[in-house]
Length: 163
Image (cartoon, rainbow, N blue to C red):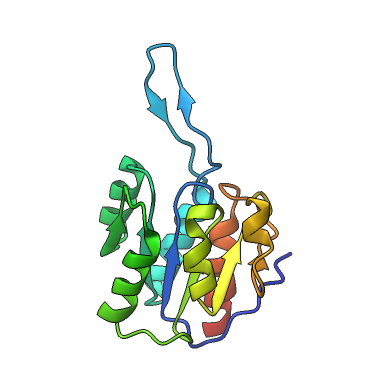
């Protein structure tokens, strides 16, 4: 059961992708084709957020075709891939949408998310995140692991506030 505490002022969910929407693994077959696993609970979480008028932004240090597919399917306008300094992109998104600290949350799991998590007032990670992230002051940790319904847990918390 989720213990997340979020206000009803949130308008945008800004998230890392690998390790949050996926299990943080890359699967390689015998022909060296790469793939990733995505949990349908998390996909439905994205759909539920959009149906309840939340904006979604994804910022990833990698290039991932799954992000393009989800962005197209759920009209995600902010799909940023191959980003080495995520804080720069986060600040641009905050400015573009005129978001206050009360109006967005950030979800991340690794050291390349640390600055974004420290910048956000509402910061969330997953149980399988690296220690340096789980030690950030004020961070909330989902009950579900990344790629196993963590994103959906955040969505359920937010839409539960609006029902």
